[in-house]
Image (tube, rainbow over all chains, first blue to last red; front, side, top):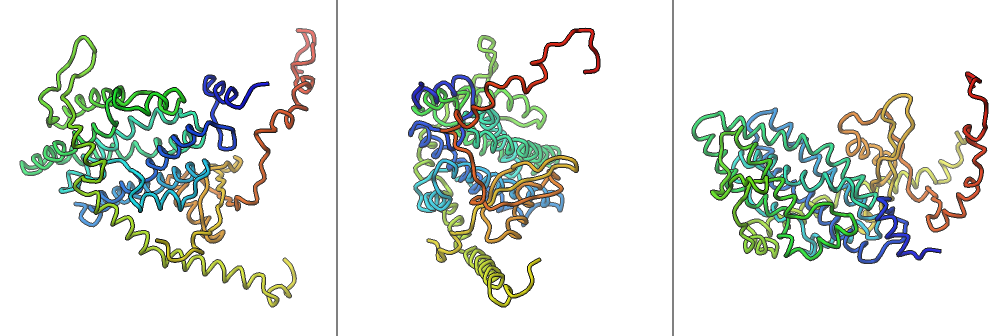
Length: 319
Length: 99
């Protein structure tokens, strides 16, 4: 008779998904709760920098696609919150952790969206980096996480394409538009590279996560893939990536690139980025301002329930 | 932070979607909603934004009873030793056709 730990290990080894009611090590559960709730928060907070431009989108087409994209992010947040709850933490707990500033979300959303080109750069680079991260998560060992990721990845590819299209249009526009495009790429490039997390030797959780087959590639592997793809794609835009050290390396078969400013990364992570405070305030305000809607829905449901069960109603013949 | 504790107690609903006429409803996910109508409308907005469905069922999660994974061994055991329930169990001559 196998022990619980052995059954779990064997499932991981044989690529059999772990489901919510299966026995799992406590640290596996904790790691998933942390990662999945951070991921859910990122989807929700990620709506803020983009929502900023909905009212100022340059055309009806751009406005409609941006609304659709932001609506998708809300859906992605929901898939992930639901999947996280299967691990035994409530929705309220995860959201309270975010609002109390205890939970993290992707630090990229703590940068401001200064111009319309930023919406393009976010789609191309930020969503591009997210997709690079998320595709391997479709094979994560925890079933609900993997299923949520499959749904998310299906929807995410339109996001990246709409972003690239925005930049492409600007890159073929007036001199000022070209400059705006390059400026957005300059500002979003490095934070996008930081999205993959610390270097492998500084990422203590990575090894365990890979051992449990939550992650399938290391931070540096995914970052390198992303650089290789972007160096080619930026040529279509006739723009530059803001890194003079990018150079093809015959030996490795990859592009070399410059050192990331990790000091900036950790500062933003600690809450000292340009928009950390603003994002959290906006999120809390939205939650509080929506309270009356939730209350009204509850009151309406209670009222319907009451009249349905009341004696007057009950005296009528059953259907 | 939350003014109204009642709204925190919305029931959880499981969402099932029929993708096309002729297919079964399949589990798509779950969501919180105050009542069935709200659950249906939110399920439409969350799970069928790209024509993924033509019909939705929502069922309060509390009404779903699941078999226990810890007991799945014994629970499904009766099927393990009955290979004669499969057509390949029966050995028939090669020349026999249409059977």
